[in-house]
Image: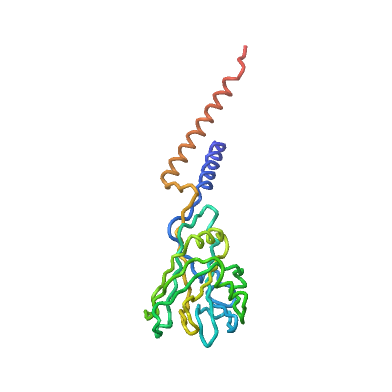
Length: 248
């Protein structure tokens, strides 16, 4: 009997292991997840000429006082596995105080692939021409018009292109960073001047893992396994009796 129970438990354990839960649907990641030392959120800005501090999480982008700034956002995707496939990605940023007093109308922001590693990027102390250039060059993730003169609490949504989705899929299990450049600025424009708090990356994820069975299905399957094991045990006992020798 003990052998039967052991075999049944082993079979059920294998079933549960094979059908581990998988991600599917919309998943929201935040810059407030896994923050690097010195700041509450993995976001901010870099400039080649204007000094910054790592505890400053305002994602200022544009120009101020003759200095040009580019912003960045980093997300921890360590919860995504190789079986998770990202099919769409939207960056959501709180609008904050912007250049709404300028007569130029909507501003244009473009997002880019970031080569700088996440830890270095988020240690945004001082100035760095190399990181500043990295945030506004290379593979584009999309260019977007941003309206001015709207409420500071407005959420701006940016649907990334196929290049961004490919980069995100390649970043599963680690950090994903994106840089932003205000391409419409003429030396005095800016966006998101006073914008703090964690920002979001919303991913639509599909999974190649097997579907997890309903609890009722798992119970029925387990009972079926128990029946098979009991049947095998009875057959073994019958075969043992059939091979016995007769006494004279």
